[in-house]
Length: 384
Ligand SMILES: [Mg+2]
Image 1: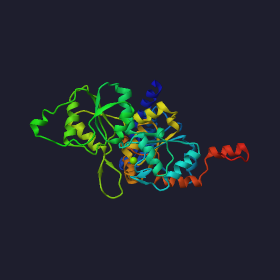
Image 2 (image 1 turned 60 degrees about the vertical axis):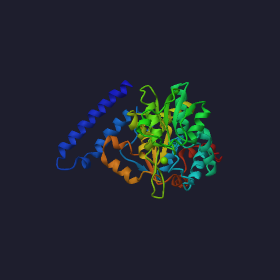
Image 3 (image 1 turned 30 degrees about the vertical axis):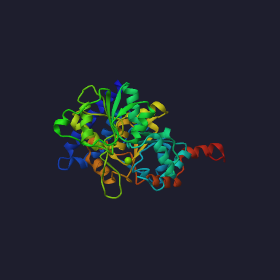
Image 4 (image 1 turned 180 degrees about the vertical axis):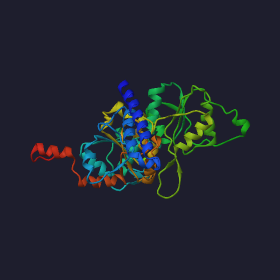
């Protein structure tokens, strides 16, 4: 670690010196045009150190994405063993599967890749997700699903060790996971506003509540916000949010507010930051690592959101494949990339494709180097 920190300092100095040097030679030309390739080289070296150098390839390229094609897909396929799939906007849109997504996962399994499904959507338990996968024609077991309803229950169980109740703003998925984890809770269901400001200033609080968890709650109300914030007025009360997504992906032009709108309203009223268990925090990856073999240098995160899926990849030192079939657009990626800003480069993926269905089609044209090696060594036997 000390060596890495020293190397980081050296690369920062190199970056500063290169910037000064190039500016000196090119006073009349905008800096972002002239020195970007050179500075990006130094910046990539620095980013490698920031990540603790956790990739097998040495550098996570935050400066420029690569579009996958029939030429480079072989190397891509041979570079990972585990693939983390976001769900909404990647594998499906509501109850409609993304075209070809089922086949892509099937082909990846056939190549020996291990998929996990990591979703910020807290409306379903693991069991309910497994049912949805089956209904939409996917092969997936509940143990492969890491949703934020499960993550929130797990966090309360493993990190808080509380004996009392949780004040829960959430729906059926969160309730099921809390029950499965043996957690007591109050809060779900309608809670309409009653009385006036004099009554609100004296709302009764349950003395057994020892934590507040906020996820997607279709019955969100002013009364619930008031109760959650009032419990959180105790500075020792743990505050957990499932995720901060601003909206759900739709193809109709309508806006469906996401859990971030609920979490942020409670956060504003409480004047406190929650612990977020969903993407882009590291909690999901750490949770999978505890339960399964996960080599981050041999893992790919596939997602449609730059501020959750792609950012989590960067936060965890995991390469990312961005698909433009959901919330974010390729144009946004290009804007982040062109900015040259270290903060915005965290939203630039390693790879790009329009959809996971396209990945399946590319796989048909490719043959993994690993498979070629097996066939060469076994002279005529087929890989299973
Ligand atoms: Mg998504």
